[in-house]
Length: 458
View (cartoon, rainbow, N blue to C red):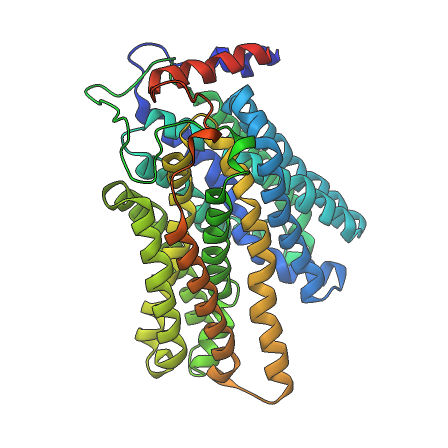
C-alpha cells in the first residue's frame, strides 16, 4: 500500500509539464502556513484554559522550534525517499497535531495542546516546508528563484486562507468561540489533510538527466559557484554554511520584530488608529510577506542571490532606521516602511534555497536547506524576546508611544548590519568538500546520483 509513496513511483513520464509541480508544492505550503494565523485562536484558548498571553504564546514558539529541528533532521531522509513520502508524513503530523490539540482542549489539558499542535504539528511544519523545495529546484534549474518563490509564497499567504476560514468556523459551531475550538480544529485537521494529500498525489520528480528544452547548464554560472556538488554532511563543515545561517537568522529576527507586534505597534505610534485599522495593517503586512516571496526571489534569478541579500539586509537596516526616526510622523510613511521590511522578510525565506543551490549545488540542497532552517527556530525565539523584553523594561519606566519601540528598532538595525557583513563574506566552497572532486560539473550525472540514492534506500 505504501509503495505508491516511493521515489521510483513518482518519476515523471516523458513530456510531463513541469508547471504542474508548483501547485502541488503550493497546496502543502498553504496548509502549513496556517501557523501564522494561530492568533485567531489566541483569545478563545485563553478563555478555555484561563491562561496568560505567554502560556498560549508558547504553542506558537514550540511549533516554530520544531519546524527548524524537524527540517534539519528530516532533510536528508527526504532527499533519499523523495518528496511524496515526506509530504505524506507532513500531512499526517500536521493533521494529527490538530486532533491531539483538540483532545487537549476538550479535556482542559494545555500540555496536550503543546504536544499536539506544537510538537507533533511542528514536525509536520518542518517536513512540509522542505519537501517540495529541492524538487522544484531540479525542475527549474534555469529559474530556481522563481520556482521556490512560487511554493514558499504559499507559506506566507497561508494565513490569508486560514484566518477568515477559522473565524467562520468559530462562529459556525457555537456562539462562544471557546466552545467552538474542538470542532473547528477537527475540521481544520480534515481540510488540511485532504489538501496536503492532493499535493502529495500530484508531485513528480524529473527523470535522470532531464533538463528544460533549450537550456544548456553552464559550468560555472556565478562567482559563488565552485562548480561542484556538496552533500549535507560536508556543507555544515564549510564557512559558507554558517555565514548563510547568520544571514537567514538576522533577516528573520528583524522581520519577526515587526510581524509579531504589528497591531500594537501602529496603535502606539498613532493613538488615533482604531482596532479595525490595525487589523487591516496586519493583513497588508501578510500580503507584503507573500508578495516579497515571489517578487524578490524571481528578481534574484536576474541580479544574483548575494546582491539581493545586500538589498534585504542593507536597505532593510536603512528602513528600520527610518522607521525609528521619522516613521512616527506619518501613518503612510510608517506603513510603507513596514511593508518594505516585510517584503524583505518574505523574500529572504524564498531566496535562501536558490542561494544554497548556487553555493552547494543541487545534489542534497533539500537536506542542506533543512539544516539551515534551524536559524529560523533561533530567530523565532530571539526576535520576540528582543522586542518584548525592551517593551517590558520601558513600560516599567513609564515610556509610551514610539519611545517604547525605538530602542528595539535600533537593535534590529545592528542585527541586520551583522547579516549584511556575513553575506559579503560568503565565498565559493573549496573543492575538498565536493561530492565528486574528480569530475566536471554535470547536471545529468548528479540527477542520476540522486535517483540511485532512492533505489539504494529501497
